[in-house]
View 1 (cartoon, helix red, strand yellow):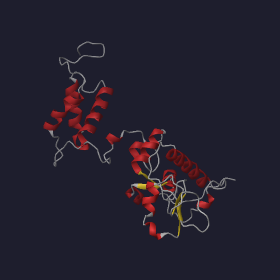
View 2 (cartoon, helix red, strand yellow):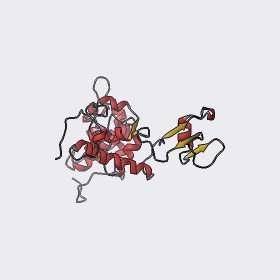
View 3 (cartoon, one colour):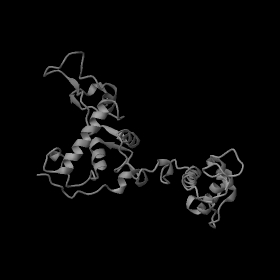
View 4 (tube, one colour):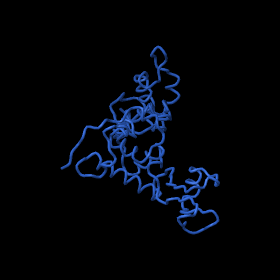
Length: 250
């Protein structure tokens, strides 16, 4: 029987992280806080706990994407040391430099015997130490048609482009204002009927200046800025008197 336990939702502090392990990424995407004390990884994949089953499915997809070269990751490999401090090689250097080597011996190039000093590098990734960058996760999820969950903003979840999201680090205020003006005027033919496209765009930007960030400290529209950027969204660059959809002058 499938059961749903009440796990904690992700803490907002996870937004401060730029790198995630596979399990962290899978749990966050599903909507469970990786630090929830009730979570037991030993339950993963068992049919009586729906959350663990779903997280296991997501984890498997991430692992296959990483090993298949479709998702970038800082892959770490398990290392087993057998008494040889003279090598002077750190675990991190060895894991990232020689991921395909299984044995390193003192003067030997074949599998070790019980009494021979060696370093054993396991070729399968250590998924508890392998990490993935936030933006690489987002890019991979988008490539799979997924734009919901922890790694996407509310605007992205609703299908709104990133360049219209004020919280995006590369948000361009004037670009967003022009796109919104173009969308409204082009889809509302009766708006300011009788005026040119450029005039209609200027009017809309002026009326909505404060909400678009195009107003001064007193809330008054910045007319100079609006006049400067309006031509960019003007699709009727031929000029002349405005016409109706039938080609006649109103």
